[in-house]
Image 1: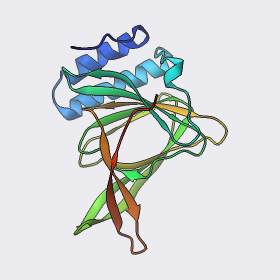
Image 2: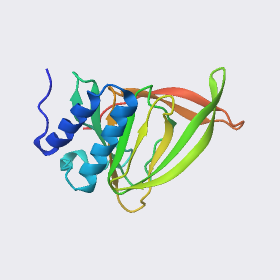
Image 3: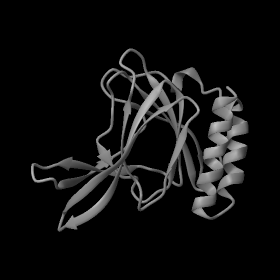
Image 4: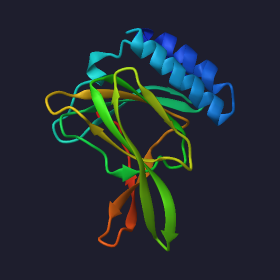
Length: 190
């Protein structure tokens, strides 16, 4: 059974439903990016306050909405000052991320070589993303680091995933320029 949408984000959910029904991943992510940018820039995305509260020891992941029928999730992440991810992938799931509050540093990497169970990445770009900006990750281009760019207050992002992202791979750098992968189980806070 599909959960009832939160009334404050029903217009977002309606646009996400329409986008996901388009079927082709590049078309879906393009439409989702447009929807996020439109709603954030128009200040027409009222995320419940309880979902945007920062945690002191790690960035917070909170489920906003899940559509099991269409196979996507909407997750709010809140980043306290200095909080960041390690280099990670998205477990083969497409994602569109939008900045709701604050500013984020987004550093994108490409996987350029695999040596057994170790990996070589090259940094492709680093972007400071402000309110109303969004980006898409479509496998195999799914490797990045996210970090709150602000040192004095939280930043909030909204992530739309083409499935339930319950795990990902985190990559740890080695002295030789190769990275080692470890699988991380992802959970929701609160």
